[in-house]
Amino acid sequence: MNWVSAACIATLASALSAGFARAECPKPDGVPIDVDIAAGPVETVFDTSLKELERLARAAGRDAHLPLRAVYSSNVLFGANIKVEGGAQPPCAVARSIDVRIVISHRTIRVARELKDKACLLAAATTHAAGHARHEEETLLAARDEIASNLREQLRQVTTAETEMEAERRLARTVSAQINADLARLDADGNAAAKTIDSIDALARLKTACPDEQADLVNERT
Ligand SMILES: [Zn+2]
Image (tube, rainbow, N blue to C red):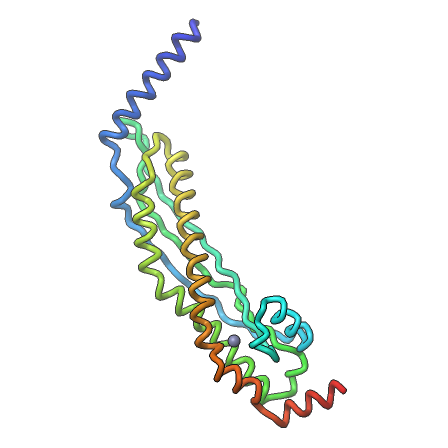
């Protein structure tokens, strides 16, 4: 076999199919895209201390939030189910549907152990932390249509592939990059918007809440 000419034929074949693909493969912009957002339950745990929370707040530059008695944390995860169909002539694999699922998971309000028997302070601190949890959920739910439309826009840029595997790889890469970018932006926006929850008034109320129990805490520490 003459390898050189075989390589030439292969190149010619792929050039022809690329020509066909450009001409006849449908673009993925008509693909149904579904974005589903779910939020798990919020769990309250007493696995930290006032000292540790103070350290966390200072490390995050949130000194204005001191004394921090409870803190909310979560993980936002996402996955995509991409259905691709291919094998037609000319060779081109096309997306049939893209289902994205974004989940807020591991939602936890971590409360200082010292608050276990301080009903009033405990309620004030957990109610405030729950406000942050609710805010995160609302922000993400409100962004659902925007996330879907950003994704639709990005998928227009994806070039068609000849194989299902390659098409799926390209789509997955685009979906992943776009969702990551949207989540990073929402996180930054959310931090800015959370300032309404952490308004000067709200933080002042937290600071002076339940004076009797605060006095008890000071006595217990000394
Ligand atoms: Zn706060």
